[in-house]
Amino acid sequence: MTAPRRARSHLLDALRGLAAVAVCVGHLRAATFVDMAALSAPSVVDKLLYAISGLGHQAVMVFFVMSGYLVGGSVLQARDRFRWSDYGMARLSRLWTVLVPCLLITWGIDQIVWQCAPDFLAGAGAVWSHSGPVAGQYDASVPTLVGNLLFLQTIVVPVFGSNGPLWSLANEFWYYLLFPLLVVHRWRGGLAMCLIVACLPVDMRYGYLIWLMGAAAVALPASRTAGRFMWLSVGGVLVATAISKWSGTQPWSIPWGDLGLGLAVAILLWCAVVPASGLRAPRWVTIGIERLSDMSFSLYLSHFPFVMLIGALVYRDGRVQPTSLAWTALIMWLCLLLVIAYLVWCLFERHTPLVLKAMRRFVGRTAP
Image (cartoon, rainbow, N blue to C red; front, side, top):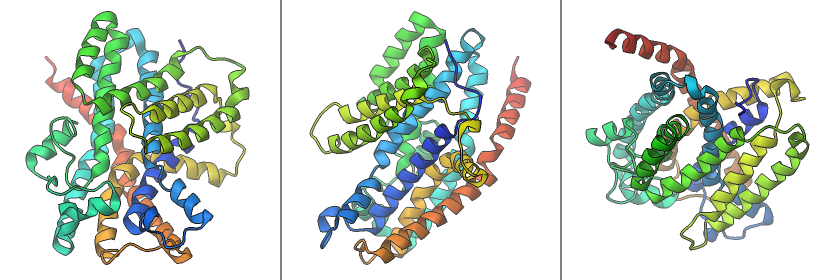
């Protein structure tokens, strides 16, 4: 049984960072540019850029596979040394350190949007951004806040405020809980896992299959020859991404495209043996990849309320056609969101080890 490679992999860093940027760009483009159907005279370049900037959903599937690879891999590595208390504190400190401030940021930004463009939070933003609160479903109440802190969004309560991307955190939390039941407690845990899975929404069940593909990439025996097929597996991911994008427009009850993409990414992770020392690039490039990866979670959780704010303040009178100036503006907005995410990372996420240490002290003091 193998474990995730301890050496830092720039492939993993690049995948994680680019996935977060893809989600952010997708929301930005949808909130600032007219939909493809409304383009006056779309060129081939416009169509290509729209396709590339519309891969946010596929990026989340990549996140699920990587989470299974890293978190599931840590469970597989621990096996008989696994302790629920250590595991739970590590996972909760990782999630809450960023989630709590981003919930507060969401509430604060929403107050501004309520003042300048209340229709955005009443449903108009959903028409533009394709991810904002729909009509009659905006909820920033205390019960919803607590439900999001307990990762019950989309199960018991809606996502908090305008921050639509919070839906995936509930998925992640329950996947974190389910996998050790199977690995550590064997058949009894497997039975409990199946009972819990049966109670989850159907979309969350399919997401768990994709998450498990990442864990399987760790569980499978390593092969010395697998690295030779890395670039072939990269091509497989690109093809699977295109199929997943096309498949999302089909009236199928099973997300075949997402499952195929998850499998392709898992194969890539299994094939790739790219430690940090193996990436031939200038040091400033590798540092940039590492930093973008480090703050990817902060970017994912913090960006959407600001996207809503940009749409409400700047593009309220109408989204724009995709001109060179408009694309330049989008890049500038993206840079602003990256700066905000970096600040969130500096102020909060980078201190996750301190939060974990404090949690361990608190549990140690309260333990009988």
